[in-house]
Length: 454
Image (cartoon, rainbow, N blue to C red; front, side, top):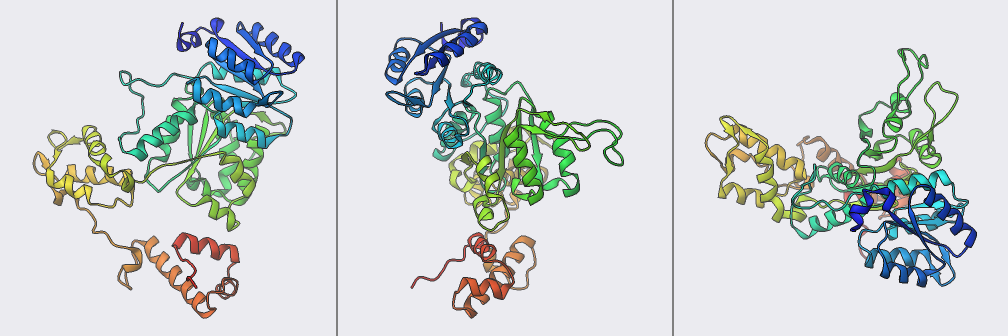
């Protein structure tokens, strides 16, 4: 019987337990058998290798410290030789570094000693719900189209991340598909039957953040006419996706960090905390590491959220995917007389030569506009209305739009002037500009200002 078939039948699922302590093995075996699962045990890495070579399993539970090796070695071995077999590690109490290392190596999840039997049952049930890789005959609800090397790598990494419970930080330019990647991680993971809750952190007023994230009790403030759940409660059992997480103010970052660490939240106006079980995925187009360096984002929260990073490629890196993306988008659009017009050869060529600063989102906007403007059955280059490429620092001195480009030019000029006056002494330049040294370093990195070579 195949592993996928046995997973649908929990009674037939078989678990491999690897631990050198007989009493721990006995406790785990007893708990798993009571769940209706079959169990095989090994006391070390070599014995586990022999069992994995001889039989098929649906989940492996391994201790981190074994007499003939490390649990991490077994995690890597399973990843290389056992296909989609999920593996969870058992770490010493408070050993966060080992847990993070295991997740980065490909572990599904981890348990801390002393093992909570309730947490064990939850982990096992979740691991056995992992879906199999979606076949071509049964396409997924959301898809990451394209066959360029960066896009193939992104899809493969997303599939690996879906088979883990590790927090994920998705980086990439605006419009590069960060939310789509988060949805795919959720849909291909063990939590696919539960809620995916996307939150745009930059769109929530600061005075409402606590009540939006954690909920509130009736009468907690004026207008609170009934109890209401927050994002954490709604996402319980599923995935909470924090888009533009860099926009969170520092006071809210403190509260978010505690909620993630404790896995408990307190509604505004409540006296007790509620347990929450969510997988955290966050994204931003900003450089989160630079924000940490500048003191604008908490380092401890950064390390909590950025256990594994997934970088989404820009459309410039995937030019060969533009035709298939355009065709897919046009197929979903309606033209003035029914079906949307096709791209002419000249229009395809124009798209191939465009830089797409707004990435996939900009491509979709361009095509929607072209469909509305097109007067025939084929879209011509003029219908695309592509903006001529130019660099921000090459724009006419008096041009004040786009506003972000204008502000970047003003900031760049001020910083370069201060650095020139101080002979590139960054400490003195920061003092002259009235900002901290960290803030200056962050701005220089963002604007691409480098120190002159000697």
